[in-house]
Length: 534
Image (cartoon, rainbow, N blue to C red; front, side, top):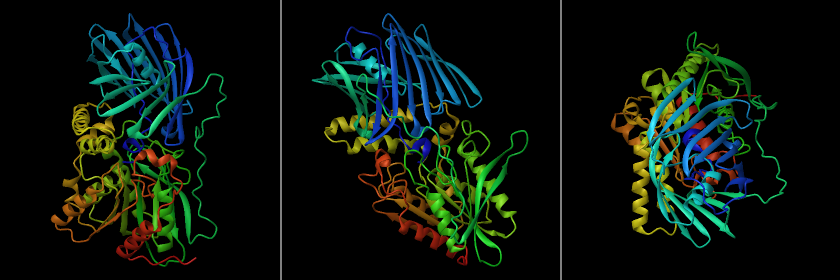
């Protein structure tokens, strides 16, 4: 899916059992993190005695992690992490572990919530935050020995076995189906790679002058209609909720020019994560703005479009960190209510267009509101969140080169087990894991268009057929499905196998005409739209 599930930042995870004499890394330095050929982030580190301090910045995820890890007598005693926005101007949350006998006492704060619990983890346990420096400490702690260690996955609070093996000039760590490979030169760690994610980190040479990371601050968006466009664009605010928890969404309402009478309209619903109204992927992909393109196409076809920044994103109010998909469905209902009340909009001809998680929200709203006129599902899931996540973590294993059938089967089983056994503490993920889309889909009676990329590795392509078959079995005969052979989850032409790892290197960031023409043509027909006249 997009955002939360959508863009795997280089998951260069690992951690340390303590110190050993081997000088695996210098006392201080900087890692440059890449996915494909694009530099996505950096990690600076400094070690002093039994303390390791790191600052990890990943602009593509609008993320900065400040971490401090301490040991005593080779045993982990504490770990503190502060999560900020990439520019460092806002704290998202904190995560801390403190040794208490054979347990680690966890304290987590974020989204207005505080959580404390004890996690059973003996002195040999290691932790897995997003950190390359701690991966180096794991190698240091192994002191050249092949070993298996209990690994605590930060955030999921799940302990998994992690195996560490040495071979020539490399060190390999495997856990939950993930392979992390460290490459050494002269006994020092120089590069860390996660082949399944096409991700790697390279240690910058001492004294290197590094260019600034791009994308630390989002450019000011321009949602105005071009001068020659056959539609207008108006900035509006949509109220959501009731006091004292009310807020408003920042939105753009486009209306076709030269059309008499009340207009049909559509509401766009973004994928997972905090997204702005065009569903852009700044700074991962420059120029990618699918809902901006959809609004333009529908404007020409005679359909008004309301597209909004998600709660807590862009210029919208509200908080995203504690919101679930059910809350976001409530936001979509508020947009529909507001649109129905606008002069010049036909309240009986309003459609929903949802991408990824939005493709799940659209049916949730339509199933409860028979006045919705049509639904477009773009790469929407048919499975519950656990099975979507299992698909995502298993796909790289299924396609990885060099694995024996036995090793592949073992890693597939371990990956599925770890996903199903994890106990996430993020409200959105807790809700998403258990929600079953198909019972809701059976209740959708409106015309439905399902669009899907065949190379989608975030929501597997077969789920489109499952959605269509479920709708038809429930008696809905107004169902159309289009699967595009070379497109990925973003509805962009894939440069390889559709993996999210390819996203930063894609150069063609516009939605293909075949997709836009099908969407706008189908919706204009169902909504009985009259083309715009400039």
